[in-house]
Image (cartoon, rainbow over the protein chains, first blue to last red):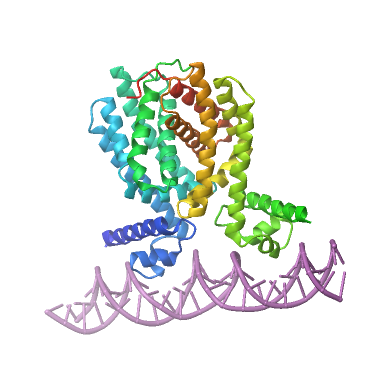
Length: 200
Length: 200
DNA sequence: AAAATTATTCTGACCGGTCAAATAAATTGT
DNA sequence: ACAATTTATTTGACCGGTCAGAATAATTTT
């Protein structure tokens, strides 16, 4: 019976994701979420405190899932470059998934500038991403493949490149450019990590 | 009288900016905008078609202003590295201005994923930014300072780093980190542009 | 005074959250 | 085994509040 409640919560969160992906964070109503979940309006209020609570749980869920997928993908590999490749592969999964996820994620980022709770959840996500980058970077430094000096700085740079390119891709209406931007970010990151210039 | 009308429009757009910065794109109401502009509610409807029209003009205005400021700042300089420095300086102006501008801009980015008009305005902005980057890059290539091969690719990378770092800075609640992220993006861009590795 | 501009009021729609009643599921007593 | 009772879940109507946009009124300008 505890499981069933958990199942319902999952069902609502999933529906919330679809609804937000379609309509946007602010535009979505509890009614929408209920319809997407094929339940009646009251259900969300039964399982969650309020609308924000539903959406906060959605943000937690998507960021944690992404993190775990990326982490296991990277841990499967042994060389730094293979790890980086695996990382980029699991970030740039495909046009459809990326569009859906990033639309929603961007909505939350915009909200996070005015919502402490969202900012905290995102900070945890960033920190998780950094831990993956650290994994890759340390391997690369051991191998001698990477020339970067500051691991923390480098992982922030990687995150910047990924977020930045993903946004640029989203903003070109052309979904076919997905592989282009994927290659672009891989090459930019590699180029940055193997740069022979003093960081001065 | 034409000028006066234009003045009123400016007043409303300015008010819309402040209102959106405080409350967020979707949360803001025409009432809010009117209050920030110290006029009554009907005024916006007189000068603009509707709410979206006000906000679209706001987006056009802020992106064009930013572009012109950045462009003139870059054109003042002669060496590539000085131009890049001037560019970064006019992007990372200061904590207060950046927070206000980027909060609003991020709101529009999130909206743009579902609004063709905003996407187009932003595409024009991106293209303007790219033209600034091209200016810098060509100078750097002439000088022999930069080793990058593909100018278009490089300008996308620069944009990624700036957007990415700006978002990261916004997401740390700590406004004092502004100069850190400014340095970070300058060093990452420089490092990328002067990298000695084959782009393969 | 006529036209242009600004301020106020009205309207119909919709939202989030509440809640009483309906239904389903689980538990207990016999 | 089964009926009675309790508990958990679901429903949909409802309410107070708010919004965008329209209509209207007041004011200023020409």
